[in-house]
Length: 203
Image (tube, rainbow, N blue to C red; front, side):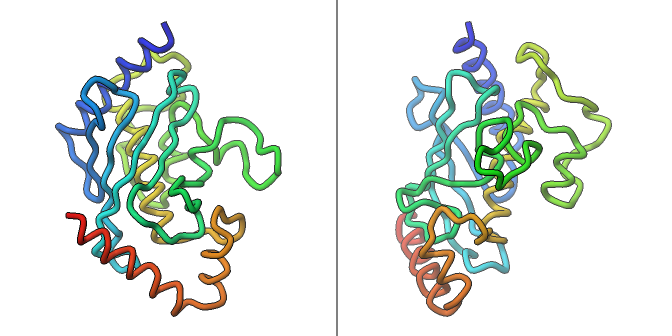
């Protein structure tokens, strides 16, 4: 039952995203027979070191979605403090809900099945959605509508775009990249430029 609900929800999300594309990223299925694995392409944000890049990634959803978050792994080469060497993205919104056992994150910063408008404004500091669209956190998968479902994937992708714009070097996934970001910005810029060029060559 849980898997069927997740599958239906993801189909709705992808359909909505295809009909209502969002600037900065695109998404589709890796395999048409598997709705739990998406292929996403992220454009490097303007006025950042990643500008001009087209970075591919795989988003894998668990059968327990949306109660548990997906994982996102870049398949394009990526040099960033919050991306592991294997391409896996490490940001708060992709961490399991609840308290952080290491004490680095607030529970409110981690994954929740649905984000309220106020939480989205806290995350991105600008108005992403009309406040009248929804007003509370829904507790049942069956209660989600198209807009509400879409918001979850969109929030993840916007969080990753925000990560590219503003790396967090306080609790890095890639310690070497974080160290270089802090101490050798020219060297960091050179590595990122190489990643951007490689991503362009793959188009």
